[in-house]
Length: 191
Image (cartoon, rainbow, N blue to C red; front, side):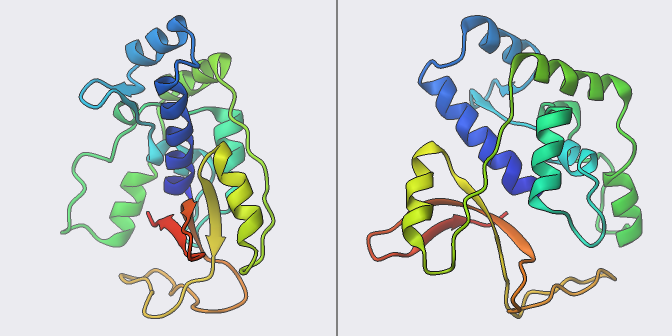
């Protein structure tokens, strides 16, 4: 959920930057604070920050929890709270979890607060059924749509995590829809 939410926000922000919809002072602040990657000139926020601030558990998270964390606690640049140094394949899943979800320094949280003084994060719900492509297509001009979907076998977790239930009525995975093809197929980025 955190990765697809961050990517949705980055996509909309980068489009607004490209269209000149942010003020010069807002762009200058984003650059000086590290939100815009100088190598790509694109906004890149920390997935790890939003995952921690939204209360992700070993059972996952929800779209509202992640959306509200971004809306109420802000975002920080990837370089302010990056993938943890020292993460390695030799670590147990528990060690990796504890490192990734370690406590965020107050200075990083303060940067998220500063972000909120300059930018608002908002989201809306689009309720669509599996065969209702029209509503989904109508929402796409406003930005990519984060969806929650059921997943099917052979998807399952390893290394001690509970398996992801496959093909049930519920939703267990979030992705990002960016288009609807002429044949009705959904163009979707899985994170």
